[in-house]
Length: 440
Image 1 (cartoon, one colour):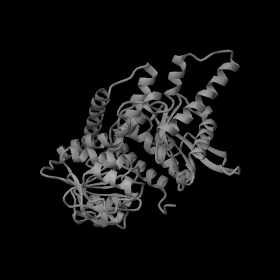
Image 2: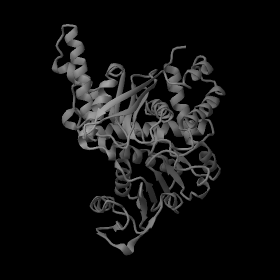
Image 3: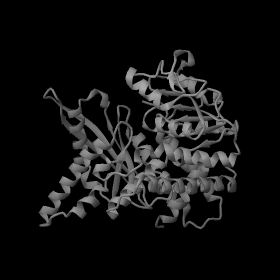
Image 4: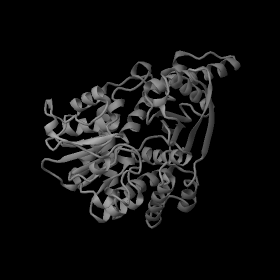
C-alpha cells in the first residue's frame, strides 16, 4: 500500500481551489456550503464477490464503486483490478473523475470502481467469472442516465463486454417482471452504460489511443503558451496502453522519446526510442531491458537500463509519469530536471512535490487535464450509443482535438487570471463548473 493517502491528497487540491474561488467575485451561490458537500462522495458501494476458482474452491473478493458527484451528469469512471485497490484510492479517483469531466466540459459527473485482486494470478475463466460477478453486483446502481463505468488499470473491452452482458441480463429480468420486452434500441441505449467496449459491441473508434492522443493535444497547446521550441526530448514512465500511445504520438509529433519504463524497470536510449519496435521487443522478451530500439534497429550499444526513479531524474524537456499514483514525491521532486511534467497517470504527483516543482519553475500539466482524452472519447461513445450513431476515427479525433485545446486554453487562462499553477487552475475551472451546476 502507498504510505501517502490519495484521498487526503485530493482533498488538499480541493481546498486550494476552494480558497482561490472564495477570494474571487464569482457568483456561485454558497461556495463554502457546496464545497463541503464535495469533501465526501454521494454514495459508496462495497461488494463481496464469491467466485468459483478452477480447482473447485470458492474465493471471496472485495470490490467498490464510488459515486462521487453527479451535478453535471451521470457518474463516470473506470473500474480497476489491482492488489493495492483501497476505498480511499477509489474515493480519490472518483473525485478526480468529477474534476476531469468538468475540466473537459463533459455532461458527466465522477465515479470509480475497483476490485482488490492481482489479475495476473487468475486464469481467463476465473477473470471472467470475477468480472461477471462484479457487473451483476453493481447492476442496480448503474445505468446510461445514472452511472457509466469504463476500463481502467488491468481492465479492457473484453471485461467490459462481460459486464455489459450481466447488466443487460439484469435489465431484461426487470422488464419481464413489468411485462415488457426490451427492443434493439433499448438494448443499444443500455449498452451505453459501459464505455471502452469493443467496437463490434458498440465501442467508439479511437478509444484505445484517446488518452495518449489527448495528452499530446494538451501538451502542444501548453508548449505553445510556454514558447518552448527546438528539438524537444521526453521520458515516459509507464509503457502500458497509455504510456505506449503517448510515446508513439510524441515521436510522431517530432518530440524525441529517449526513455520508457514499466513496473520492472526502464531503458534510456539517447538517440531516441522507436516506440513500436520497443513494444514488439518487450512482448517478445517479456521485459524492456535490452530493447534499445532506435530508428529501424535494436542494438544493445544504443542504450542502458535505468530504474523508474532514475528515469524521473533524466535531463529531458518533458517528463511523462504514465504509471500509478505518487510517483513524484517530496523525496525525488527536487531531482527532476525536466522543463515540463505531463501527467498521464492519475495522481502521480503529491501536493508536496507540486510545491517543490512550482518553486523550481517546472510547470506540471495536471492529470485532470492531460489525461482527460480517454474520458472525453468515452463520453463520445456514450453519446453515439444513445443516438444509435457511429462516428469515424477522423470525426472522433477532430472532436477530441477541439475539446482538449479548449480545455487547455481555459486552464491556462485561469492560471494567468489567478496567478497560480496549472493544477490549481484546472481545479478552479472544474470546481467553478461543478458549483454552477449544483443546487444550493
